[in-house]
Length: 146
Image 1: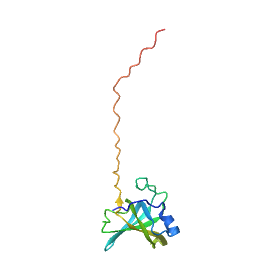
Image 2: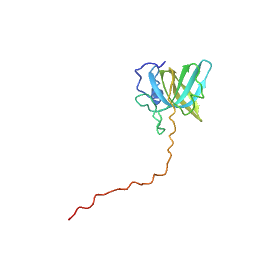
Image 3: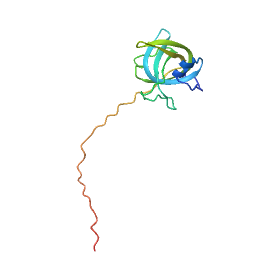
């Protein structure tokens, strides 16, 4: 079940800077990893800007930070795989520090509703075919008489 809005207008980076607890947010982005645990599943997400409908913009030129979102139940990491686009709404419950490479990265943790996994767009394959021969004659009117 998706937590109803209204949602706070802040990014994961803003939430970390201000230690903003309790805010109801809707964030989305690219899945980094899915971590099933005994009673819940946590998603680590690279936050991206969202369109009005909640779909993440696939622009990897700008990140809004990272966040962790946890929901009760099991979500299969084969379906919720690295690189998939996801949107999650929930409440900021705490902050935790995780290693990203050698860097200690401070990120907000959401108690989340059910995540929305966006469908994978089919690859469009363009096939070029030779142009058909032009067998159609073109007629021009005769020049005017002088």
